[in-house]
Image (cartoon, rainbow, N blue to C red):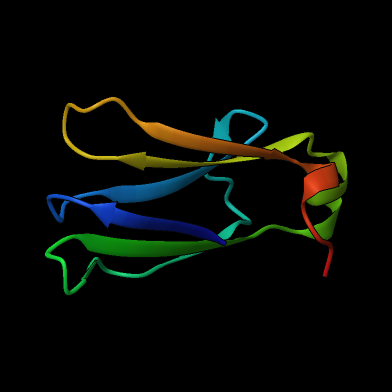
Length: 85
């Protein structure tokens, strides 16, 4: 799960990359719409599910937050940092 907090304005998008590649056909992505917090900023979440065989061969997973022409914000985790389920 990727969680982004305290964003402004509301038009941010969360996306995923596995080993630097965007969106595989067998991936399942679930994204929440931006939720307005009491402080006037927004929060978003996104969940990625990929097939076990792809996960076994993956070295890293990256969540990327983008908004317009602003530089993306990225967080990358290696497979060893992620729990298996």
